[in-house]
Image (cartoon, rainbow, N blue to C red):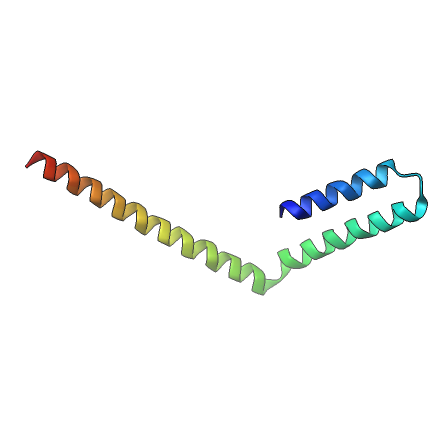
Amino acid sequence: MILYIALLREAWNTAHNTEDKREKIQVLSLAKECYSMKMDLLTNATVVDDAIRFVSSNVSKDKEIAKENEEAEEEKTINKIF
C-alpha cells in the first residue's frame, strides 16, 4: 500500500510540475491505471471475502491469546495469595 501511495504521489507531482505534454499524459495514464487496479481489488468479491476471513481469523486468535494471558495473570495472582 505504501508503494501505491508513493507511486501516485510521484505521478501527481510529475503531472503538476512537467511542461512536457507527453510526460504529463504518461503519468496521468499511470495514475488512472493505479486507481483502476485499486477499484478492481476493492470490488472483487473473492479478494474482499478473503480479506474478511483473514481479519476475522486474526481477531479470533487475538481474543484467544488475550483470554489466555488474562487467565495466566489470574493464576499468578491466586498463586501469590496462597
